[in-house]
Length: 155
Image (tube, one colour):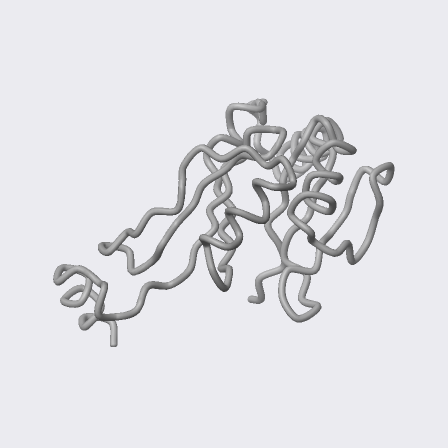
């Protein structure tokens, strides 16, 4: 199994497309602000993030559920999207914060060291309220003792 992408189901496709291209600076690999679907290059030309018009997606999900024999109709409404987060690693969270703020991006936090996670983080939301995390790994000497002990379990 290979990871394909994180797909955000959005109502304001054009607004979100412009946000990810003009404000966050992602390069589209396929699609434009009018296409209803777009994928973006996220690292070294690798595609990993896509946008899709949510109304089209909900219809396809309902049809798929019916076709595989699921009788109950399930709603895939906006509230469901609150359960996801997109996480981007950046070279320097503080510099990224300043650069994006200059482009008009609104943040829900400021750069903060998270020693228990081993990263310095920053959070914002896109125009559809999807949560986005930007992070830079902390130097190992800044990790909490708890993280160091936990990390040893997996190495």
